[in-house]
Length: 482
Image 1 (spheres, rainbow, N blue to C red):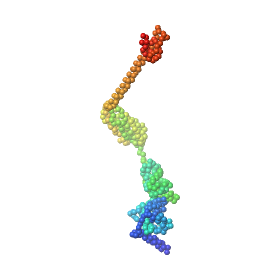
Image 2: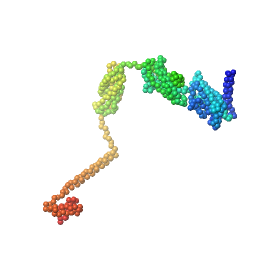
Image 3: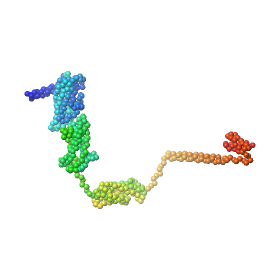
Image 4: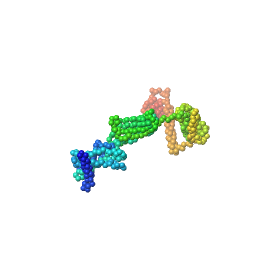
């Protein structure tokens, strides 16, 4: 009897849904949006704060098999309507494998809210292609002989997913081959499809070619922004790691598994190679790397520099001679003392071209063969051509006419100034000599100073009458003796 009642209830629900959907196609029934004045229905989810409240809004994302609760608020002139049948329909994204349609019906409560829930399905085959993407939901209700609708969209996928693993070296450069005890950096790309911050624990595990665990990294309580994020983790290749291809996996958890954390998404996988230290082959090898002159055009008698770079490409400390040439002529010899393996040295030769005839000369340098050296092809290097020309006096500079005119005017002005200074000096000297010649004559012995005096008619000063000229202003007073 119980099973029969349950079957009848299911049948009644399906009939009700069918009736509501069929009513949308009737000619005397008009479908209106919730944006119209008065009648309104608003469908949203439980994902607060981004639950899709409002007309034709989007909700936050859901993950596979998560419970979705749809709410529909039915109002008329902003007042809730109770006991109204609301129809729900949900569709998965369009795909080539399976189209999913979920329908439901519910009545509004005293607050005007109808509720319908379902779980995101997870098929056994092609699940991600069928389920992942944007889902759409629609809620309809009949208010006063008019059907009112509202729509809602939401994403379904892995909320937190590691989409890529890149291995880097200590300089943060991409690298896939590592020596034992070398630093390895894991660069993870983490995607958060939710509209809010999400916390996660990231665990990275690596196994060597023999499937032995060699690296375990756990990063707890990481916070990821919506969208794409990057996380880096540093480690070191163990000395006991097996040579060959190693596998690394990285996964995001809600919390560490030891405290009941579960995976957000499947782990991401990548590989890198562990290699042996290269065997060092002992050898003697000296190489001349470059020969270059300080200039390529010189005049006879000039001294130019010839730069030679030598390198010890062997594994022993070497001492040797290096000789520089122009054509077959020796420029000079330099002794290199104790050059360490893999080191370079710059040598500078000075070439005096005083006795060199005109022509083009090819430069070269040669290092002598050290004991035990097998590769002697790189002991000589030929490069650089120098052109030696006979010395000629450089041409006289051509001075512009305007500059010559300016120099002439300046010379004239300076000459005039010097002439004026000379004239002034001569006049001053002549005046000084004239003053020196004006000496006051002595008093005649026959005329005593107390006999008489006279007053100058020009300056008004008195002076002895024996003077013909006034001793103060030099005015002539010769007529006073008539």
